Length: 624
View 1 (tube, rainbow, N blue to C red):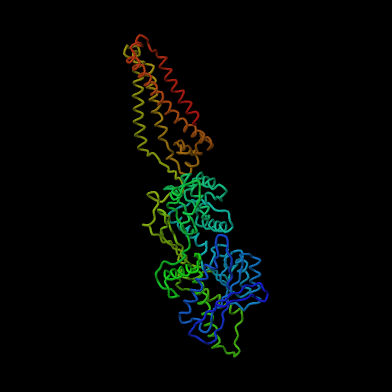
View 2: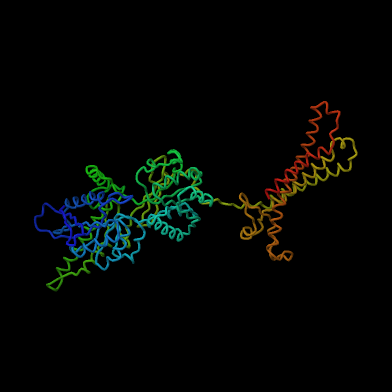
């Protein structure tokens, strides 16, 4: 690595790495590549450049050990500091273009605000950019960024995996809970579009406020069972604490978190609202959807290393230099090999044209070189440490990893192949809190009473009413008999009448609207919290000459739906009250010898029954 100085403008920081093959002593031609990265720490990212430098150097070292595909050429990286500032980044870029060598490609770029502006102008400069450190869906539009390629799988693909999961479990109704920051808002917009295309209804969209419990409670009030959370680690601990306090976890709920977090983030979470055990309880079973950082296939790729061998070497380098790992290091490593493959193709194309060109003074314009690099990038396909590397419309067709939080650790439960658009789940590893996946809403099921059953019960009830009438007739006819007189005939009348009234409710409760279509049923049925109070009075249609308007049918229906509740309650209270009054009088006389001298008259029994009825009527009135 040779030290670079500032350009003549004094404002472009140039650092260069020269790929040197010791076995070759001849002069090698430089292939300049402009590397745009912030060289200072960024909030939430740390010093990403320092974290990926060992991966890039490792790729260069591995390349030097192979039979050089670039022949007598070498890659020369020039790094400029974007400072994650659009104005400063553009100034550094223009200085590098004006005062530096003619670059073949641009590598890196972390901050979307800088990268998006540069990517729009790449076509004018005949340059191709390979981006490895951000997943924002803003850069997914090929027409706007035709010369832009991304090594890391975008959030757009992660959202596709989320939609596939929803479709797999037939979840058609979800809610979203998002943090109000620009990057996450962009992900939410893309997710909403994809959910709409997949015919998945977003019941409610909540943005986290100062009190996340307010937003979580709104999801619960809207009966949202499947919740997609888009927020960072700090907000995640607060959200799951709220979920615990509101009982929004377990077999009835499923949380899905697109975008992974770093390590055991929940161990570092600080929250006074719940304990670590409470947090783990609420988190149990949630699904994490994130791009695959390193392939789990134990096969040697283009570099001659398996992903496991590469990861071991990279971590050893970090340990020696005292650096913190970045989840993008594998993409930077594979990115070097992508550029090598692309430039090799360009060199071969130029050599072929030079050999067979009829003109002696053969030259290739900058525009032609740019076109060759662009075409070569589109044909890239090889096995890297991050998996199969290929591009479609500038986007990496990578693999999305699916994990589930089980007993304090993340367990891989499947993958989503972006190229084939196929979801592969390891079903025996998936553990839901209940016996089956949770439902996406409270389902109201219509139960009809079969006509034969209704006829049998109605006939039996009719016989019971006739028997009660015969008892009533018998009591009235022999009301002067001394046995009837001593049995409190007035209470007997109430018992018989109450029984007949309660039996009458059987006819009304058996009418459930089964003789009408579902459309009419739903239109006319008033929905309460726990049931559909519907009657077969719905068979009355608009065509009935006695009822000219649908509102008349609805009014009658509503009236009868209330009447049947009153009939059953009043009938039961009357029967029970009369039996209780008679039993009370007998118990009082038998257990109290002094009161035997005193007669308990019927009006006292009427007071007991009347009191019970009054309480019943007050409750019914308040409820209705």
